[in-house]
Length: 207
Image: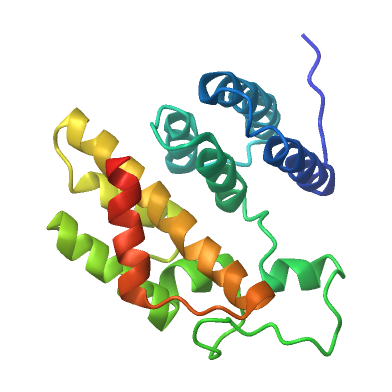
């Protein structure tokens, strides 16, 4: 058996190329698109496992990601998010795609640089989204240092398999709902309130 080792920069490029292709294929049936995404994911998964990049906890999250009933575009986004490959301001700066004098501050709070962890977990605005979603779902998760701890803590509250599937879906929808208003604020100068984001999570979870 021959193992192909791909550098992190090449993986970054592959992820974004796949993601760009997926965005142009939303007219394909969800089941077909999900299969296509999953097969590409399996290639990168095997490559990263060969390199020993993932911890056991991370591997469990990635292996279960594609079992979710979330829309394919949400799964594709979640995959790139968990790999820390989405275009946050800090990631754009690292790849020299953001001018040096451009602000790296979080668009929601303006207090910290926009990293994945800050944007989705630590920002005072998005943390309120999580708080309200947890109140709706009737459980609590302590503040987590990264997304993997957060999702594992989230799922750890659920003891039945059916409930875990529901929790997975809501977690994935929540991060998608956080990302969309972030982009809308940057590109269209439209501000969405916390209550509106929470309501959108609820609506999407019932579709």
